[in-house]
Length: 312
Ligand SMILES: [Mn+2]
Image (spheres, helix red, strand yellow):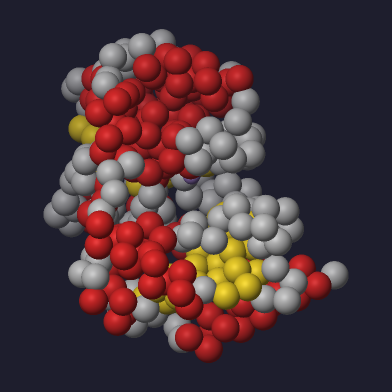
């Protein structure tokens, strides 16, 4: 594929490479970014490679990020942004200060950017794209790269349950598994349950509700997070409590943030909800999006707007 060769060529032509992804990172953001870092370091050991961005507690087992000393580091660099559809959500607003910019993403192309842009919504995840890139470039895939990229595919695809799964997904995963990482250890880290979190879920479910037309919604308040000692960066863990419920077509989760704002996760089984997320300053996929809003009144307005989407 021509785009892949262009990306490999750009990597070969730059001495310094900076990898970025979206704010509020998830498994796919981590996997595509840290996986690509590991791949470049293994296959081009003389390159200077950095991965910048905020860390989240629940993904510590996947890896760590580099500290940006100052923005001078972007001088002359190749910047590759993975898993991020719109520039506002890139977790480092120096992204355009390098020499060359590449976008690798599987979200709808909300704001096209980059000197090279490989955007393809038929992939489950940006991690699957990085896996395919490694295979086509005939790169060595270390167990560490295999693990983080597999984890990205696994989380973004709902462990191979959401739409978008193809035979290509499994072909890429097959090559990742061949790297020799321990898949059972990985699943143990991924699906470890926390007793306090289960108790918290029970309380969140007590106040969850469903609108007339089938919007389920739940609130994870600051009070509940303090009561159960949940880290603020773990607040995305509770966004699917209302998944798979009969007659719930859209489910919304509102979680308190450390800055007093609300993190909103939009999910849908049919009707697209990304336009609603974009309207509220967020973005994402047709059926899985996110946004950050100011007040609880905003949250309730979103519930009503989602309800109207289902009213027709
Ligand atoms: Mn993704």
